[in-house]
Length: 127
Image (cartoon, rainbow, N blue to C red; front, side, top):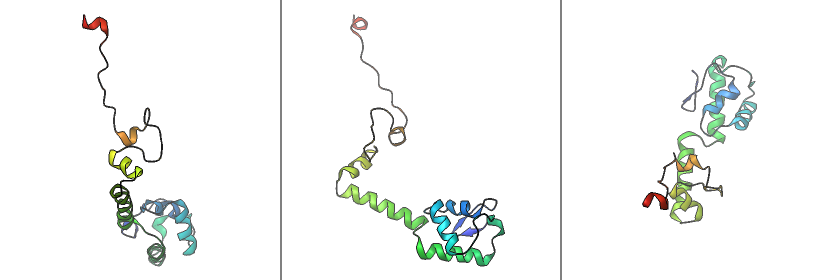
């Protein structure tokens, strides 16, 4: 497996796809990186030379925030929202959707698995 920017990229995939395994590099950025390095995107990652790998690593290092630094940056942004007590920060704190989605139904990703609550007892059951 070739190693780029501290991440093992899959050897059997095309380079344009393999670069997306790096956190912070999506399909668009992957194409930009390869274009800047003059590398064909259809080549398999295992067939890259050391020179090409070093050019890709240098291009990523020069122009992109990736991996740990990007994760830290995102966490700091969320923490700032929580600290200033804005609406989005409160939603993050409560573990609810932050961008206006409905929560009466759906929102299971943010809220987690259903917590079943017992229903009201009927009048007949009380007698």
